[in-house]
Length: 328
Image 1 (cartoon, helix red, strand yellow):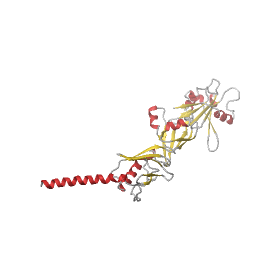
Image 2 (image 1 turned 90 degrees about the vertical axis):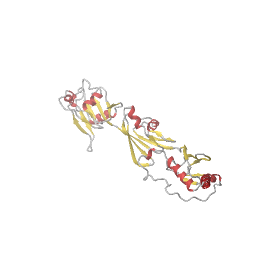
Image 3 (image 1 turned 45 degrees about the horizontal axis):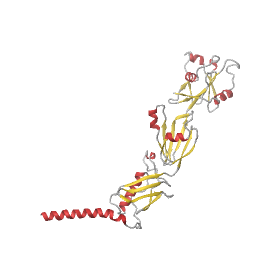
Image 4 (image 1 turned 135 degrees about the vertical axis):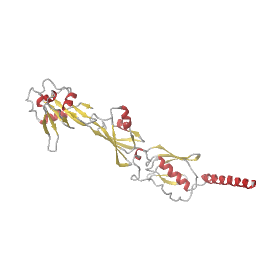
């Protein structure tokens, strides 16, 4: 009985030694081996197959420099440039297509191929993106310097906006991002005046992405006001005549209050809407809500008769306004 147990233990030890040896004995063999059979499930997923949200993870691209290794096997460490066909030529395996994959997907693909070829039993493959090929991020809309800016790896949204000189005074809160890997998916980011909330908006931007900064709605207040300006409509996007006049510092002593009017765009051309500003200021009439691109004109009672100022003169006055104030 004891003899049988000893024989069983010896057999188990020999079997374990054989399994370990079969996994590592071949790593020193000549690398000119016959082609490996295709491994099921190792082709890179197409953009349609990618899960939503995967587009924020960097992906391997043509020209990238990768460092590939197997844990505990120093002889397998290698640095490889992704070719124009999207392949890297790995020792033992030959060409492996990795372009368009994430690092994790490339590691799993190489691991499966190494096991399918019988080179390792359970290799721990590590892929490191040592150098990204230079690609551009397109930034346009309400930024100081729209254009294409070269980046060599993942960046943050605020870094990219800084490259473009920052946003203009007319910039809105919404920034639209289109990722190269998923051009059909649009990511909208909302900026905030709250620094804590703004940190959530500082999302990753990848090489090849497109960033569009929206234009905020603007209301122009011109004429007999103390500070003619454009009022940027943020947050709710709502502003009334009374609020717009207040942001402009109020009216001048010579303002013809009941001659005020709103110039509003329409499909048929500019429309004039008369406003009883004196009654609104005295709370005798309800306040009037303004729309984006409205021009609130308060005439001066001196000189030309109030209300006889030409429409094109009012529009030119609005266009000439150089300062902007943000209405929250």
